[in-house]
Structure formats: structure tokens, C-alpha cells
Image (spheres, rainbow, N blue to C red):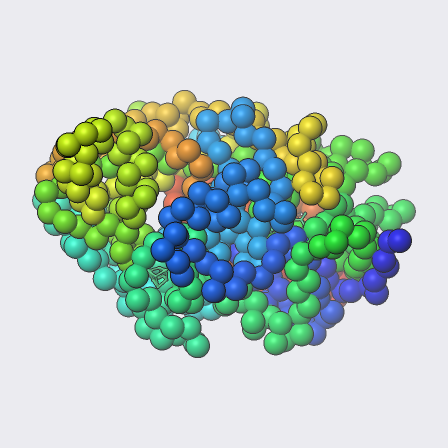
Length: 535
Ligand SMILES: Cc1cc2nc3c(=O)[nH]c(=O)nc-3n(C[C@H](O)[C@H](O)[C@H](O)COP(=O)(O)OP(=O)(O)OC[C@H]3O[C@@H](n4cnc5c(N)ncnc54)[C@H](O)[C@@H]3O)c2cc1C
Ligand code: SF4
């Protein structure tokens, strides 16, 4: 029997980076706010980092691909028609539980790509409208970094940067010798004790979850505050569809609990925060007589303009031992090639992300895959020369929006509640291809200047970097966008989208800092307009 719940004022779907920020911000209104999240709370003791098998678990229950991970809380994504595979994490905190916590912001130019470069579209908002929300978000998440980067928008991280370490110092020296920009990265990792969180102890790779609590995932930053302020968070509740009433307004959602039991949750206002794949999936599955092509989709743009950030990775090996898998993954960035320079043969640009390398299992897998580990008596010698000797650069390529890159519902795959999985159709555009080649050539120069040998490149990450953007873009024109300049659906006046779907262009940096700044901005707009929201 279907269970009917009492109506809430605000229903948020998804508890990741953006859903958590919006819940926290709206809590001060004292409205009745409920968040439904398909995943579980993940206990720090459950993170792979607690055990010696931590690398093996990155290929099983903490794999970054939902398809390989295959938890009951995941949904399948058919990405056969894409060279890049989808990475995500479905739990309280969403992708932030698993992310690397590299924390650059979009640049002011990223919001004006049409004006500056004559391609794609301008955002209906600009960097300066978001600036206070970037700062608030940095304070709440707890960001480490160094003020004064001449190539990034001015800001002042609340904690000092993570140590460069042996790997970082080598990169810095090399970049100085080339005369190219570098700066210690902002990272969402505490370098001092911070608001009840312990500081980073540089033990190991943070991507499958930080048991120390130093890495800022929203389950330990925003959510405790939002819950203390009265927000209810219901985990293991997977939303099948957003429902509408006879006036064409969102009326709530139908969801399944952990036992597969159906629930109806009425709401005055619905806010979707399921990410650039989960949000279009949910909207396309919310079909009714009034909205036969999916909710909020009169433009036909729900699911289109998917941006995934192609991310070539270039590695090489040096004689001296470097940091390997010890310490947070990233310690510096370069914005030398970030802004457009038409002489390079492409528009927009990329950030170079300088990484430490990896643990012993991953090193063995990667080296074997490129044929660098001979069998027989040379095996151990070859492996020893590679483990903890690797430098690794990532090229974070701007990914212009193209309508044919899209998310649809898969006709075959279904999650454990029988809801259709997502399907990705994606190709890498010509501009991005040229950008990738440029970045690979520059990264190779950097590695050579650092004294590296055996340089090799994987042109895209097998899994995308987990940046899922653009599939419900914001804009002023209802024919060319899904939501308006403050996240409200053009078609359904009490329906909002706050995650990376609303991005108009992708920029060439990791997105979460900007995703959360946009979410806080939208929440602020909602608060300012509460009295007249549905007029
Ligand atoms: C391995 C990895 C490394 C990354 N590294 C970085 C990095 O270094 N820096 C950076 O900026 N970003 C990084 N990212 C990306 C970052 O995680 C995302 O940008 C960010 O989490 C997106 O926030 P979001 O709010 O849009 O969605 P998410 O954080 O993905 O949250 C969406 C939530 O919605 C829930 N949900 C979806 N559908 C439903 C439904 N039907 N019913 C109920 N709940 C639902 C999901 O379970 C999930 O918890 C990384 C991601 C991965 C996977
Ligand atoms: S290196 Fe630091 S941030 Fe990463 S898992 Fe260890 S304590 Fe956490």
C-alpha cells in the first residue's frame, strides 16, 4: 500500500554538493524542509582508507563508476555511446564523499563566452553576483589555499595551503624554469583543526573518502548544520517522479524506500539537486498528460548540452622518489593556458592539475597496461623504479555545450526499484580535441623539463572526472533554456534546479566550488522572493 505523507513547504531531491548547500541556506526561513536522498549515510569506519585493501575497494564497492560499483543505491548509466564514462557517488553528501576536493572556481570570463569568444552562450548571471556565495561556501566547507594567485579571481581561503611535498616542490621548480604560472591549489581539505573537523594527516589518497574527516564532504559540513536547524534528511528514499497538479504546478514526489515501498510526498515547492545526469533522468521520467515529454521540458533541452570535461592525463617517471600515494592528491595548479589565445588554434582553455601519483596496486595496474612491467627477473626492478617515482598531470579541458551531447532514459537498464537508468550520448568536439592536443604537448614539455622518462598519456579518463554539467541550462529565453536566471523552471513556477545541470558553459576547472556558489545564490534568490514566489 502506498504511504501518504504530510505536506512539506520545500522538498529537496538529492543531498550532494548543491542539495546540502540549499538545505542549509533555506533553513533560516523556518519553513518545513525535507530532503530525499537515494543513498545511505556512509560511516567514516566504512571508508576503504581504514584498511590495507583500500586500493582494491576502489575497484569494487568504492569504484567511481556506478556501473562497476553496482550498489543497490546506484542507478545504471549506459555510456556505451560515449568515450568518457560517468563517475559519481550516490550517498548522503553525493559526489563530495568521493571527490578529490580540488577547489578552483570558474573565472569571470567563463560566464561571458558568447560575448568574448563568439561561441556557446553567456550565462544570465556573472562571477561578481556569485562572489559573496563563493566566500560563504569556502568558509562553510573549510578551504585551504594561498591568497594572491595572479591568475585566479581574488579570494582569501580560510586555512593555509596543503604542503607542496616532494612532488609539488619538483613541479614548482620545473614551472619556474619554464616561466609558466603555477600556484598552490585551493583544496577542500582542512590543514588546521577547523570547526570540529580534524586536520589532514597526509596519510593517503582521499578519493574514496577521508576517514579522518579532514576532507570537506557535505555529510560532515552542511548537513549537520542544516539538520540542527530543523531540516529533515531522509536517506534511502529514491524518487521515481516529480508529480504535478491540475494547475501545472509541482505537487511533490513519488519515491521508494529501502524496502521498495512506494510513498507519496506532497510539497509546496520542489528543488532538484540530483546532478547533471540524475536531474534530467528524473525530469524525463516525470511524464504526465500535461508534460508528455518530461517535466520542465517545453524547450526540449532537458538532458541536452551535457558537458563532461575531457581530461587527458600525462604521466612520467623520475629518478628520485616522490610522494606517491601519500597526502591529498593535488597540490598545485597552473592557469597559464586558461584564457583564450586564438593563436593556439582553439577557443577557451584549460587548467593543468598537478597530482601526486598513486598507491602500489594502481601503479601495478597502470604500468602493466602500458607494457612497462616485464615478467621474469626484471619484474621487481622495473616495478620499484616506477612505484613512488611517478609525476602525473591532468588537463582540465573546457567543454563547449553541444546539443547532441545528451542524457536520455535507457530503454533497457533499470535500477533496483525498476526506474529506467540513464543513457549518455557524447562525443568530444573539435575545439576540445585541439585543446587536448595542446595540453598534452605542454604537459609533456613540463614532464621532460622535470627530468621524467617513459612519458605516456591517456587521452581521456576512462571514467570522466565526475563533472556532470549543462543538461538543464539556465537562461532568460524559455526556448533556449530550462530554468531562469535564478534556477526556476520556465514551465513550472514552483520547481527549481540547483545542481551542475544549470551550467551554460563548462569552464576548464573542477566544478564543485562554483556548483555550490550557484546553489547558495539560487537559495538566496528564493529567500528574497518568498512573498511573491508563485505570483
Ligand atoms: C571520483 C570523483 C572525483 C571528483 N573530484 C572532484 C574534485 O577534485 N573537485 C571538484 O570540484 N569536483 C570533483 N568531483 C565532482 C563532484 O563530486 C561533483 O561536481 C559534485 O558532487 C556535484 O554536485 P551535485 O550537487 O551537482 O550532485 P551530487 O553531489 O552528485 O549529488 C546528487 C545526489 O542526488 C542523489 N540522487 C540522484 N537521483 C536521485 C533520486 N532519483 N532520488 C533521490 N536521490 C537522488 C544522489 O544519490 C546524490 O547523492 C569528483 C567526482 C568524482 C566522482
Ligand atoms: S590525505 Fe588528508 S584529506 Fe586525504 S584521506 Fe588522508 S587525512 Fe583525509
